[in-house]
Length: 515
Image 1 (cartoon, rainbow, N blue to C red):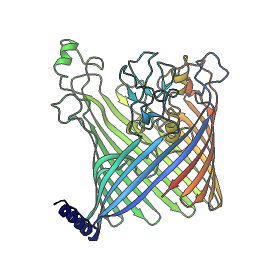
Image 2 (image 1 turned 60 degrees about the vertical axis):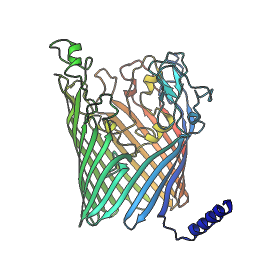
Image 3 (image 1 turned 180 degrees about the vertical axis):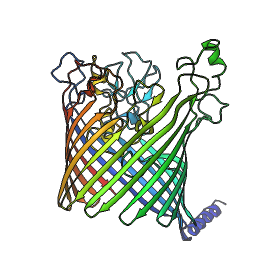
Image 4 (image 1 turned 90 degrees about the vertical axis):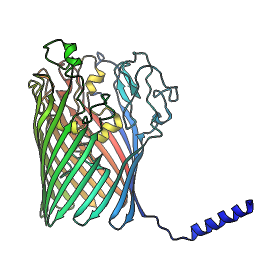
């Protein structure tokens, strides 16, 4: 009997290997980069000022990311696409081994308090309770408690899977797919959201409609019987193209019910007292209905390239169910203009960007913060330091509240990771002496449109000068060296006129492979 089964299995294997292959065609693409950073004065505080705490000085580190995209051709006109990132981290970061702080590395995780990841990217963050860097944060941990980050399974993030189907009238995309990429690169993030998108071309026109789920709150908000406590986004767009350019208009509607509660008309009012007006302290239940228009254009006229993009946002940032005097309206706008002249091998150009900031004196209106709220702008890198998400990712803090994090006398919590609340000018020029080499220089100025309070010392963010050289070693492999210098503005003093700041410079290099 045993011989019978062995023969039967052998015959089955022969038959299996003799059959024609029916698997889908598979295409791979992706990227891998390694970047090194030396940041001379990460805190922006004067190194000679001994009145501040000691967490100052340079930072030097390497950061990397591997990305792989796989496209399965199931049938003609039908594909399944997946993408994952792996080892997106700083070299030497030990979070994937459930390590402790940067010195011990392999300690047993602490049982104290609530432990959170430092960030999804595996970078250390400043911990105010200990006065130094740790790999996690804990709101209830004491100053002497070691804080540990959770394991992230060797740092693998499987973030995309979606179907692309060619239909008789257009293209259908369904699943976790690319989002926040529209028009020019201004405000682009290229993130991922679950969505259903329909793209319909009609001659030179293309119509786009999409329904996206940003947050599922039905099962996870703790209220149970609210089945509408989600965050949904709906898009409707049109693009018109001609020989030398294109223009488009995107309309987006965001409805956020995640802050709705079931007890707002009962327990919360009872707790506040009969006839009391609900406030942020005794109860929150509101919805958010936000609308946005995003027009853009691109035009090439001989050696001149012109582009522009704008946005206008309006609606209800907070519309409370049973609270008076707390509602907040959205009224914000911004514009980006870019011109470039390419005279080969020399090119030059300039940018102007204005993004309205939030006026702290108008509590019933929100005039800024749209980019930060949408996490928009991570793919837009106008400088090496200011408004550069790669710099922010590698260092873990970028220029977000640096002086406030390091100085006992400074309370600055400004965030310039995402370009927002800003008046920005940039001039640049470059030369390509050979096809494989590109040398680029820029000078930028940034000023905040609004400050967090009228007591801020200044709205001057500063000047930044950048110089980069990129050389193509292979068609798919390039090496870039960059030098950036920031003339620090008094905006980083926040409300403390006595704070002593200093300039900063970085030296970085990056090896990039695409395939």
